[in-house]
Image (cartoon, rainbow, N blue to C red):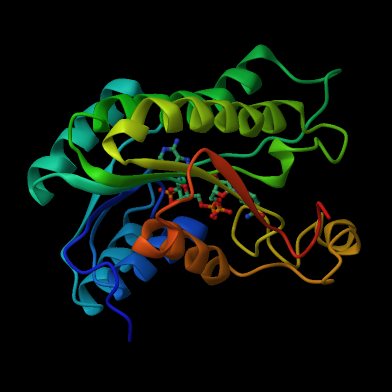
Length: 247
Ligand code: NDP
């Protein structure tokens, strides 16, 4: 097994389930110590921590609502204190909302933008003083940050467009320190948020040229690559992992 991230210190938001859990486990398998945040699912968070430790890394879970900037800042401070700094920051925590402009409330927009955008901003601002030179900031966006794709997705899509702008700006700001900032844009991935046997599945599979949902571990492999030395000249960009959806 490769240990290409040996000695690295990682913080993964929304690491209790789905894509975040897969990324946390993969970074640990590659040699990193990994602290995760989560919203409220204690059992799932414990399971991820156990997997990190089984892979040989130091693991810990911190409950922190991504929409609460004070909680996010406290979580980053605690993670940096425990790890002795941060090399890899993965913004993965996210929520979806599908409604429509005729029925959505302003609260629907605030919730989605609060978790998916404000959480990313608060986490990055808090982490910058702790980020090691040569570190990584990865943001899990979505193909819906490129095209809204279906009716009812405005809030979610807007949140994922926003993180591209943040990543491009921060890539320039942090380049002098060698910190690389990129967005991973998954297509449909089989998780609790978007189960491969869920309501949207048939419609989504039909627009994926590879004809199937992706797996969280496939996204984790990309995150591991971007976190590694192999990705040393990649910053300020967006990488799709979508089975060809945006081709
Ligand atoms: P899941 O719903 O399966 O898991 C979400 C994770 O985020 C959980 O760990 C959850 O914690 C955490 N989380 C949710 N809300 C908050 C919050 N307010 N504060 C802190 N943590 C929170 O989602 P996915 O794994 O599918 O999605 C992960 C990311 O990938 C999201 O940003 C999503 O937008 C993006 N994405 C997903 C796609 C898909 O098809 N699945 C496609 C494209 C992008 P807890 O367990 O405590 O609830």
